[in-house]
Image 1: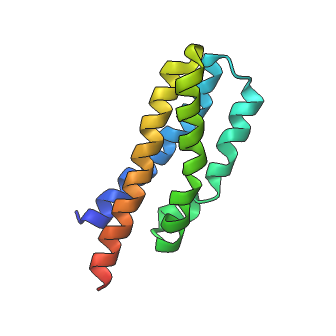
Image 2 (image 1 turned 180 degrees about the horizontal axis):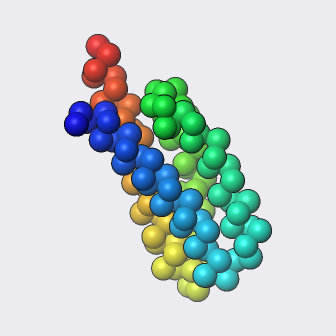
Length: 111
């Protein structure tokens, strides 16, 4: 299995984990409509991520930044949600890193 295929699979797996972690915010006291509204925008890059489109991976890295900021903020200021914020932060950061790795691996193949 090539590095490109591996990182693409890992990116999809982490995307699923990020969506589930956003839904897990209900356990920390957030209302379910807010959790679902937070997870809905993540459907936008899904098609391109599954197909392995470099352009989608490039803009999806920027797309992950608000989720990183939200998780970091909640980790620092909300003691009741600290555990779910830590999990979300790690998952979003992992998703971000695997998208960068995919972009590097697919660039190397095309040169």
